[in-house]
Length: 211
Image 1: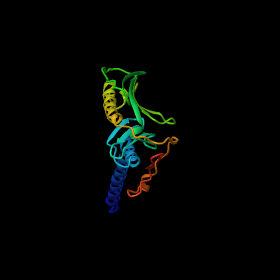
Image 2: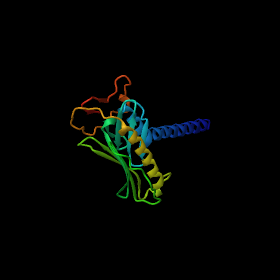
Image 3: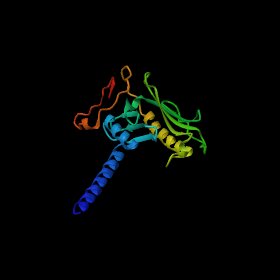
Image 4: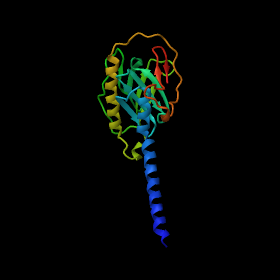
């Protein structure tokens, strides 16, 4: 009979351990945290601006200190890195209509309307790369209203509009001349355990993009 309290205690401790391990795994694999970690690695520093298409594993981030931009999909499993001066424009597209845009060398077309109902709200980033010229972030799709804590179409439009303002700041910067180069193929980041702060696994040369 004296074994029962010990057995119950061991079962309770095992239950607590499993719960803690499950919580830790969920925290580490959280979509936003996972993407942010991978963006930090390819941008060579924390993203100073980041936008996430929640539930779709797609995101984009800027680091103004290193002069890099990156787009991610598959929850950060695949990424492309660009120099900030390769950003050529951004568009806010609602149900196939471009409602706001910012392009290098053009006045910004500001968002002058919002909608309460939409089937699709997309932020499109456009880069000077013939192989991978654009990247779409669907911030709202029909059916998202059934998801917990989902933004409304109007909120998604406002978030995209804030990113247009950030893109405009980048587009106003003078574009440095650079040699032509072949575009990269999308590559998968290295596992987290291979991180090395002194020798990051990602490097961006002047004339080519490697990750």
